[in-house]
Length: 535
Image 1 (cartoon, helix red, strand yellow):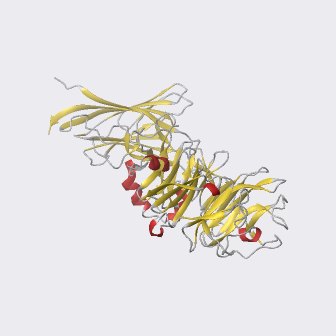
Image 2 (tube, rainbow, N blue to C red):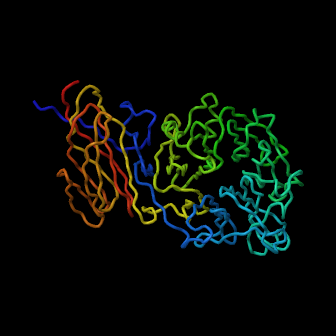
Image 3 (tube, helix red, strand yellow):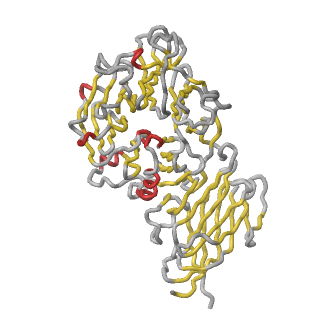
């Protein structure tokens, strides 16, 4: 008597994201063993990430084909401006990149200002002149005198309508003991109507804050400083600053210090000290509106979760990919690591440019253990990231500002790869003979859809190439294994079928497709096997 087929049906495959920590057969089938150039879409399906398009129309001569490594949009009433940096130059603009210069104290000539790196941190607050209000951007980088981007004039804040860069020291006042050449913070935070600065050469444990609504004034009014040497052991240096819900958060490498009452420095109070965990990359810190995400030396963390669960400090967003993630992080120079939180796409993206990888953390819904659903990106490799007021995700590329969107990497295709975890169908000692795989795919336009499978952890050695059909015409396609690709209606739903071959005790299935100019996601797949002998 013929044995019946055993089936596994996986709806919303990859919904739990990557799990490379536990790759055994005990994982639920909704985990992925590989999810490259994928996102978890708003419907809970594994799908293709978007690509990028060029924003500036032509190369800037000073930038040439060098990488843009800083991006920031300053919001102004008379029109927003993007500040970028690369090849030891600062630039302004989007469609056209204009090389910026630093003006002298009276804005009568260019200042001799030497730039030796491109990893600026930019932040801004309103400036209140008593008559008018404008936003000023404060631009800092280790080893460089702090800059301000503001309205230029023969006197400071003249409201001429012409914006440009000047040294902060030339139009404002510095903390006591500092000069233009020695006030070189690496961290700048605009929050609660003040500018906050930290990580200064020779002074790694003091935060300096400005007067209210005057980020240029660091010596009078309600300006001041906050030294954390008595709170943080072993001279642990400040790496990054953040603000949330009237808290000032100071990230050191191995400690986090939280002060409450940050809207009025006179009432600043030490609220919490989290020891043994800190931030290792300044530009990994992102405020999602409800949480602060950052990269520690043990993975990507949620600050609020750390505060709430100090008894369980090792729970982290990257729990399911931690070892792989940290192996790549350890190969990076910390200042090269960039990140962004995209509210439109509800993900936190961490770019590791040395390896060419991005780890993408879906922030819509946490898994039961508090970790996030994770996928990875290749090819796109941002060197800088910025979310604009219009919620566009801008990326720094070689010679260009790019915008995340569409389904091509600057007119080129990219390969989406999704591999399942391993199936034993509840019978670990029984040989399985694959008979059929059915897949339902949303989107796509006439490209090949490759189904792969393999047995017993030996790789995906079998494949079948199917065709995703155009949304314009309903038709049928034949694969190399005499399988059919069915298309239904105007919704562009591809129902794909392929016959299987081979046998083994444990099965793994994978899907690969070249993405070019059309979205694609996997709704569901079914695997049918026949049981063989017991081993």
